Image (cartoon, rainbow, N blue to C red):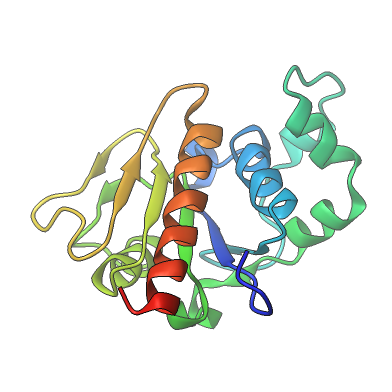
Amino acid sequence: MDGDIPIRFLIVLAMNGDSSEARISRLAPAYYLFRDAHAEVVLATPSGGFPDLTSELRQTAHPEPSTRRFLADRSARDDLADTLHLGQIVTEDFDAAFCIGLSGPLWLADGVAATIRTFLTLGKPVAIVPGRHLDITPEGASAGLLILGDSQSSPLLSAHALLKVALEQRNARATGD
């Protein structure tokens, strides 16, 4: 990491009502990869506060180690209970964004899509583990880098890629490249 200023990641949980693809099992791998790399992690949802993930919180058996770790980690659960509202996000304060569950058109919608568009327009990398129907046309990734994945391993793999890109961009700014 870069000396005094840690990399800052925004993790957005795109909560879409009952059909949300935002789940702890998708959040935990990225959350811990970033935290274990000593990055700052901020969680956000469209409405802020505690996202409705109670069905997953109440399950007693989770096959993924990162999900079990998250559920046993009081600090992580506190972060989840106190997510920021998207209106509180200042995009310039973050190096990259990781979004879970985004569905719909990226360039025509507001809310989560608008936050992601702002990151991309500013040339900041974004990883998306999409919901059921993500449409990135007509502008694609704009000036940013868009990482997409929708498999069981996508949250962790895309988080690794996002961490690497954010570090490379930080180093390039520091050396003037």
